[in-house]
Image (cartoon, rainbow, N blue to C red; front, side):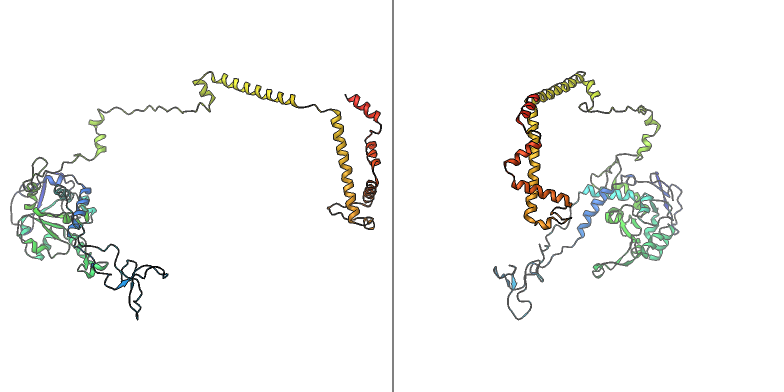
Length: 464
């Protein structure tokens, strides 16, 4: 298979039945401009999806479906829903819900109508662009292979055969033609792929499905090859002036394997025009010009012509400075404000002076601790100790008898074990406290070494 589709001439494949003895010039035709048009899969997909809707048949449910029963709501107050219910009795149907889409035997929600907008109107120029893109894609071997066609034995693309193919009448002769040009494996692939359709379509006159084979395009009206090729599975036939996008790009996928007759191939320029000439058949139509003649952008940029005029590559890399916050970084703040260090120091000194002044003020308000205050503090602690002993002794006398208290190892309510000598001491102190009056207080004072008033006055005067 030859390589590029942008060559100026295309070889016409001769058949065994072709009796022409023309020279080399007669066996080649110039490549039409439509084969070099821009390939737009987006336009092809959109147009295919729109025009494929024009074959839809309207469908709808009956406008009486779900309402052919006598039913009326029971109203509120009966602990059941307000849905209409079938009247009557003597059957399970009586009392069942009706009419609603949630009811058995009821109508559907939003019943379908036949006046839906089934078909779509597509711009004529847009449809022509889609057909042109599909024709151009059929000349690219990679796209044809990607679509799944078996073209390994095909001599070249686009594949053009002599006009003798239009005179073929028998299907057996048509199969010989396919074998001569290397298109028979693709037809066999379509034949072997026939299978029963999945789903309900098999019962709706769409029982079998199969892959697509080659598309044969002829140019003369009433050509005999129509009856010869129409019975081969997967092979389709189309007239060059009535090319259909649904056949050129089945499913909206570019790359259909197309077999052209010489006469049909020569008529492409007159039907679709060129990049500079308006079409003769389609009023005012000119082929869409591509944005780029050469789509290899990397090759264009790296070419010597472009690299010789562009600026050289900048190898110097300038590192962006790291932005630092001057409110957190003192060195950055000093660059912006050299007085910031002195201001910060003055603020710290002022704060220290304020704290010191506050502390001095509090110290002046505090009164000094004298010996008389110390004496009363000690006296209060001494009294507190003896009162505590009095309280313990009272509890012991009230709760237990003297005989039980005399037993060694007696257990207090608290987890403390007292020896016999300690218990006797507590008993004596408690009895002394109970019998004491004013002499008890004098005894406490004598224990504190303040028995005589003179000694106390002397100590008080010495402390002052």
